[in-house]
Length: 323
Image (cartoon, rainbow, N blue to C red; front, side, top):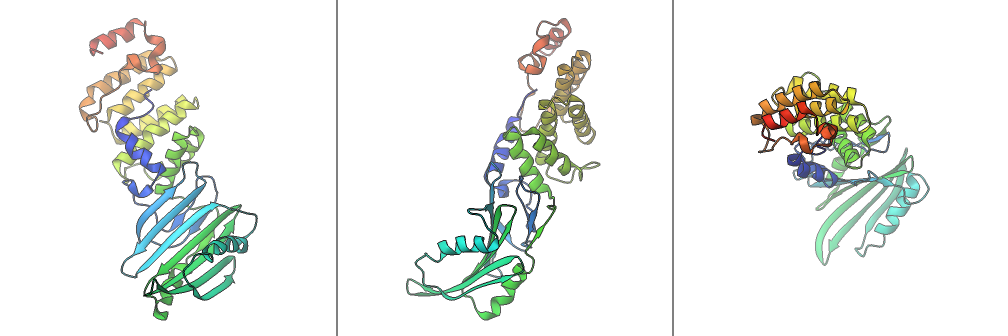
């Protein structure tokens, strides 16, 4: 089986760097990591995303959003704890770094509410120019990870306090974590590139639960999920489920030739050559439906058909199609 579809490589490589580069809108109400079983809820749905970085190893995440109408900027960090300790230790670590910054700070407040530690301060001016910058950090800790939600605004006045409260009042830890399609896609894709195929299967199967009867997400994303899910099952030796996945893909996209080709590869790998060639025939009959001027792979160069290189039926197929 061809392990990657080239027209998706750029799309998927971007998944390592910035979810906002994807053709799938991030959920700005819940944030998590692939290796933790909880999520941070904070409602940023009225904000515009500028950054949504997830480290390739899944160890940390950084979200940056803005609401131009409100003049607010919010960032969210989730990462492994730098030291042992709870939300108080988290605040102590990060505030210790912020306090060293050269800008003169005023109205500094440190306080706690439930399991969240807060820091607020103002910066009245910068380089002699009036700034009226207000900053609020909310720090949380969970299972060896630290969370920092930072809300800020320039030209701040006391009338703006409810804007900060509106964000703060939505902050909480959800356990188990909330699943959302953008995260499931990015987590599954990162797992695939990291050859963690069971993790790919877990995330992609969950993603497709909402796409059983019809396709409601971006088609490029959907093609990728079906293709990589089938490959992942193949890589762990579960050809039965790989065939099931491609049958699902064929049901909803009956003209897409790659699913027939990959299903043929599965049959070839379990020594059912007649069924494999039947699927290849269908794939080549539909090759005009390939995306972005792609070409179907040549099965004579595909490792799935390695053992058939001297097989009469296989060679007849190759000759018939001029391969």
